[in-house]
Length: 96
Image (cartoon, rainbow, N blue to C red; front, side, top):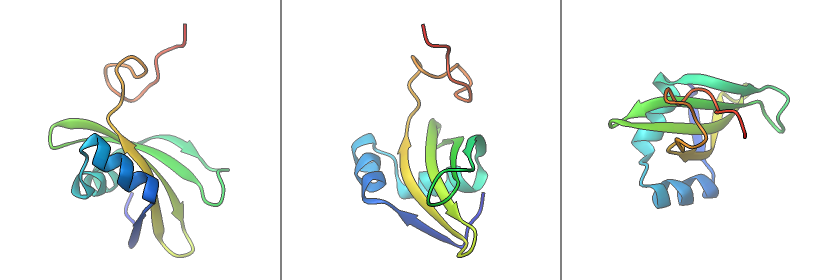
């Protein structure tokens, strides 16, 4: 997913700092990553969960996209928990 403008929420910046995920890594995941979940009815804009490896680590980025302004909004970024995600980091494990 590529967008002309990218805006990081305060929450995203805080979580990236806490999780030691750089802006460069998040941008790479958004540009080169795979959309693994879509929420088209999310408001105010459709949202996406994007996965890729950046700097050798798996990263999930949640972002929303305003097509009218070609702006992506980074909601959060995190390293997927292996207790929740399958080994490929693309599918959630069934809840027990």
